[in-house]
Image (tube, rainbow over the protein chains, first blue to last red):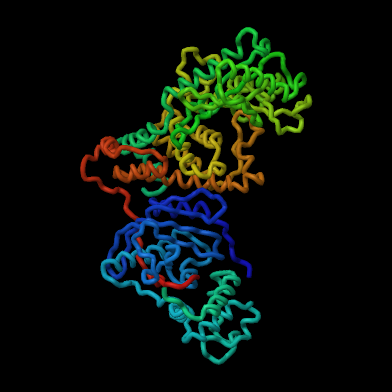
Length: 228
Length: 412
């Protein structure tokens, strides 16, 4: 693979940009674990002409990216810890989105400020409006794997679960072997002969192959999404 | 504003109102952090008492001209209250033998034990319960009489004339005023370290140290070269610790923030001498506390962005205060990473305090950044805002575009 920058932790420049945009947050000392940030996350966001100004108590943990996605916890007790609120019941971690979608938003290099603006703010914006309006105005995915299939069909530009599974298998294989696989787009050709290979190449850029290997494996082990 | 460079506005815009308010806000914080006068008085009594003991008739160090002096933050006027109530103050002292002892006449162990013997008899004389505790470079004396102190006494000898003239030359070459360089070099000493392989043998291989010279350098940064010269220092001068310059205050505020941020990660924290040296190098005498803070933080940030591994000891250019960053231990404790992280955080917190005019928010930040409990009413009075506060810091504004849809899985 090559070309992927492995960040052990966030750069201090990125930290500075984040803290100056979200001054209610502060960073913990580096003591070997993931970089932890905590405090009041204040924002003002708009979507479809509706403004929301709010602040949540958050804890954000950033381990090495791209191996691991940042983890975000709501610590003020305002969002119920349950799947219907898109929060992991056991730990309170927010389910900001599907893995591949979040990686697409983050891009090649984790920029904490960009992650906050594009992944955390929309989630909290929707959570605030959900309290008042009873629904997720920015949409939501079905629970479990069904939700991932929905999102990945959209993101990959393919139709059907089999196509998603086939694309994930291709992402988990080496480039050389992948071109001989049947193309997931449904054209009947091999990947190497179809323009869909460009789409695959774009997505490969988002993470080292071992990340796709793990995703592919997880998809196959847990056949059914569990609604908690 | 909202950026580090907001400080620059305070420095150059001449906005006196803003600046005064900023100074008032920082002064409120400072009042909770700085050492009460009686702590300095107690410290003075302690080392005065010990000094008298060492110079009494019949002292076994008689003839060796022992000189007891305070070093470190108590000498510089940058000491602060411990973050945790009831925690002990560290009072760092040196015991320099100035006559009749040389590296060629005594081993490090002999010097250490000669000073230790007198400290032991002082302990008995003053009825100090806890035993004298040997550390690598000093003796620790736990002295409890109302104020919880421990005194670390570093034994040493005056450095030899050749070393002193070499040092003076070296400092002069680095741009230090000639007379100041000579004054600084004259105070240089050799100290003992029980980790040295030659601790028990006659050797020229001693650690060099110069706490008095460092104070002199610090005063020269604080008040100009003239005030730092020996011949100019008056006997009735205000002691260094009571001069309350913006530099000393800025260092106190910085150390208070550092101690809070690293309260549960002490071994990871940036050391005081690095903070003090970089701050003193950036300081311009006469500037206000807010201006000084801005200047010092910009210098820290330049240091961070420059990714430097070097903070030279201004009174001994052969010593790099940041040496430990590259050791296995320094890497394990991520010392460089933590220094950078602290610079970013302390800058953000100062920026917040200067930008913010809502007393509630200021009280909250004083607590989180400095572990200081400010009175909301006093803050409001200082700001002169009366009723109806405005939260002056606008939150981050985001225009949402193609948001990720929230999901719920068993795990991912």
